[in-house]
Length: 258
Image 1: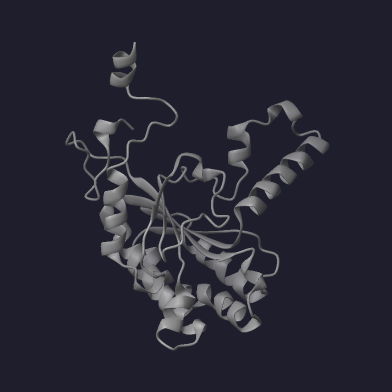
Image 2: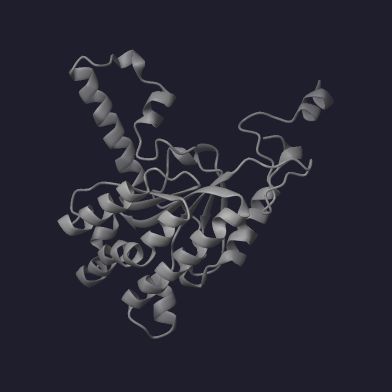
């Protein structure tokens, strides 16, 4: 995308042509701190975070976002207190029970990415049902990273490739960036254009490490349960001001130094 054709939150480029739809990824961070600031249990912060997710999913298609990937539970979150882990495990159920009918009706395709090991049979059934129910939808794509880690996903992809080599289905020379990318959990979605992290923290925390190679990063000083359409639009405005060169330089800079 040229610097002169950057998307605006309204979905139009500076040239007046429709901008391509965006893939935005969000680290849903700050639930516990939100609750502690209010003297509430951390578990209530996670429940408030589900409401923020609902607001964000509703706002995203109106802002030229077609793919939204959210980080709900990381492979490292198992180290948290057992009561908090149990609450986090219940969040997909809370979300799907209240919203899956609406998501399906509005053409949203739901995909849950991450390892299945450690998840209860009930949760796996609910995930499978949500994915099967919405798999034919193509208006908007919601990827929920749950029991997910970027490093773990790369290791899992490498292991699957090694197994294919051992079985004679592939040779080592087949492995390139495109091949490995196709074996990641995010296969089927374009790389994220923008990764947003609210809560004031400024790190990826093992989220979409491979896919983030050329993503723009925006950090916002708002806790996730307070997140809404206005914060998402502010992140997109910051993104629209970026000059995405993908390792190259602008033509006019080449001529100026030539």
